[in-house]
Image (cartoon, rainbow, N blue to C red):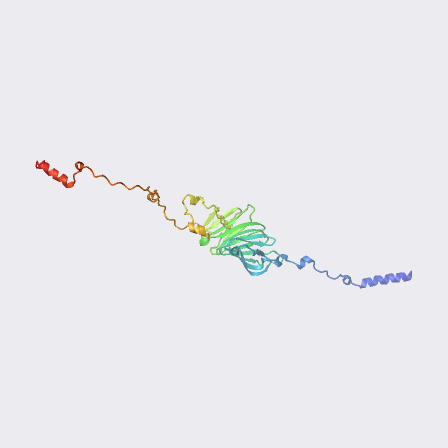
Length: 312
């Protein structure tokens, strides 16, 4: 009993002498989610397909990018130059941006946002038109033109169309009843104009003072050209409004020979009349009786004078 009591008392003393900090476990490793604090930042901001059946319609992309399997992947910034057709730019995890024909657009990620947040997209253009169909996040997207700064607030679904015309005319269409907050501010004049959901506005001459509300003309990409009419005699030509096109020359020798000028057809009946039948030689006429001989010209004159002078 004494030994057991001594052992128990010694163990209690040892427990009191050892501080609790000795038993603190080693620090755990950070969870996988903390390692990739901003997975969106590591991904590209845009992907553009470079494959096209027509060389004139193909888009060209420059900037900080990589090309793989016929696609240009823009990492942080780049420029998209559309060809003769509209170019579709894929915005990963967000949507698409359609760059209309003959339009150049510069794209960049907003580097001012804190780490771990999805950066907004910066779009800059100085001519042409674009159509945006993508989702917005906490950070706003911005579209810059020579005269305006267009802020696209979120979160929401964007269906925005912007077209730049002559003399600074800028058309902005904020389509959809659930459209996001769109604020147009002037670069030179100051001031701002909010484009309401479902509203289409034309800012004439690049000014907020000349606003055409409910613009009738569309703000996005122009419609594709109409197909060539296959009818050889369209209505305009049949009505005589448009001259008929000259037929193409044929390589067939027979056709070429027929196209030479043809002499006029002349018909002469004398050339086709039957030849007369041969006639027997005529017999010499018999001498007329002397009494029946007709007087000649001088004989008639002499008879005329004899009547006048009574000699007859």
